[in-house]
Length: 235
Image (cartoon, rainbow, N blue to C red; front, side, top):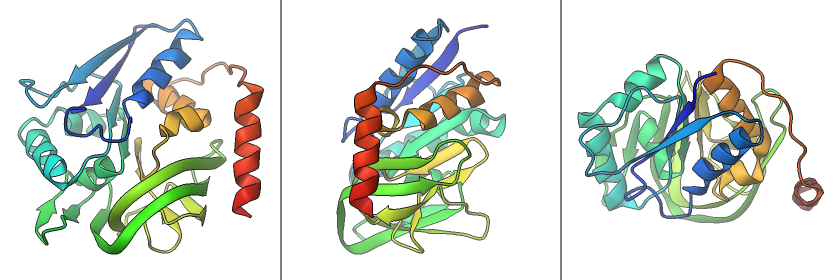
């Protein structure tokens, strides 16, 4: 098996809440299985976003940084081309909004998104801050937990499919939906980093990337205890 290539996209603009940790999680879960990996960090000063990677990770950012990231991705469409051929893409918070159809910043300006998921975001009346628990719609993922801190309210379109349904927290702010999924593109408001707190989702992204089921690895008992306690707290 050739090395799995992971792209961390624009962490200098989309890295407010430690979402870089998602790359570290994927690297480690590949090492545990003796699968080679190669990570690429794409900065806003880079000449181009590569289209040859297997997994693309976008984090969160404030309005000014998010708008700047949109300009970079629009003029260098490597991410879009990779998604079209089936590469796995994970967008967190501001990354979710960029991957959607359109988003409106706090100054009232509407921006076109990349359109990889059918979702439109507008500012809400107040920030959503706190723990989130959701039941994932993706098979085998189960319960999702994470931390949200965002003003945006995201409404899914006719072709939109939520990542999960919220039992605690705000999520998208409409119809108890959390995040969005289309093909191998996964969007969410959950920080944590999300892949550290939800290893089943991390493994699903990697399985999409390599096109095969991964052998399971034992999870620390502390992680399962944490997931169980958060599930009980949400009820």
